[in-house]
Length: 147
Image (tube, rainbow, N blue to C red; front, side, top):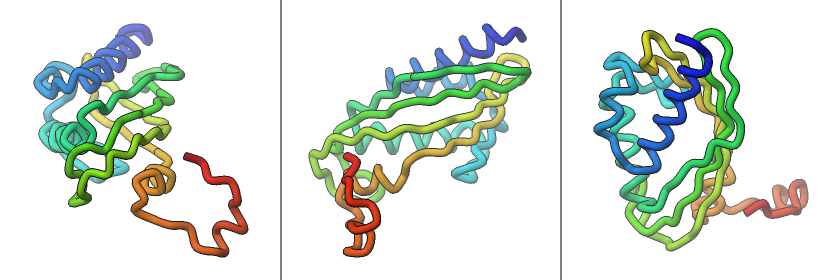
């Protein structure tokens, strides 16, 4: 597949995510998909993770800020936004708006996503939900609250 075709697959994947259309993943993601960061195996596991986000953040939305392709890989920098109005990881809804950035690397084979590695700002995500509170030492080291 061409680099443009691989990037188009990732754009469609993000569209499916933003439309909360897990059924479209059957077309875009290989059955034996592996998500290395979360240690997930199989297309159904990624559907479960996405459904968990949609439940906790019904307006959850990703915007691709940058996209680069080389060989069978596509890299994106994506900004995610949402409002915590549903239960998420056992956490009762807070009504808080969250924004966080991730860098994701996808590998595509025969028109299907087979692998993903994702690096995101999980610490800031949890701070926005008030799940964690900086210590006094942390406040001195990092005085600027990035929300």
